[in-house]
Length: 122
Image 1 (cartoon, one colour):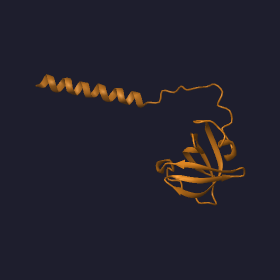
Image 2: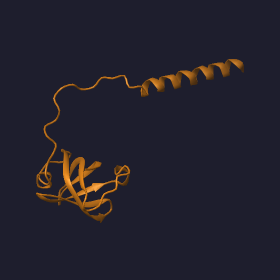
Image 3: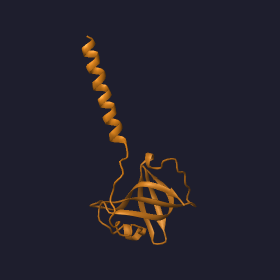
Image 4: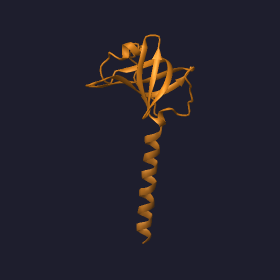
């Protein structure tokens, strides 16, 4: 019985130490050139291909329901989809300027929209 407990304790210790090492930031990363300028207008985003990363700067005019919102900048409007957990505590109104980071989402018979990952109030 003591052998089983000792082996179990050893296995748990090894498992937790491996998990701790996996979470530890060991540095490293990419040092080459960054993607081209991701800052685009609503009009430009409406013409880009699916999954193109974009950054939009402008105002969210209104909620359209189902986590969809009307976004406006100087070039026009585009629908953006912001999941509830992607707000991360940021609260904005129609008069606030925001930076939205996400990707273009295309549907065959619908206009392009932007699936937002990050909302930053400016």
